Image (cartoon, rainbow, N blue to C red):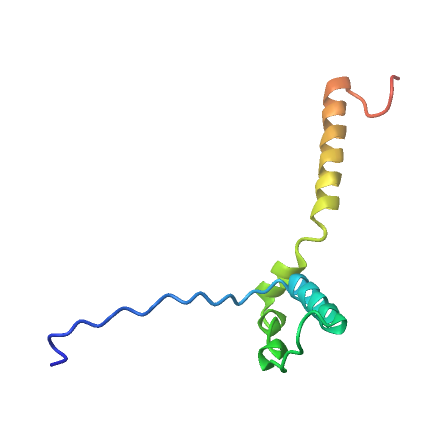
Length: 99
């Protein structure tokens, strides 16, 4: 009777492959301090902690996204400075002071 029954669509499960390591490390630190103070019970070892963030270490696109653009601001500042010099030259006809 499979011909007359309709299949239910699969449920949507969002699995994030990119993680915020700084946020996770901060949360681990807070949990560890709370456990040391006795506010939280001891937690059993979770194997998924070993694999979080491993995907981004082995893909070039994810590595670039994590690193960000480190040289962008100095380059932009240099371009603006050069454009200001060109504008000054076009306005006055010479680069430095009055001749």
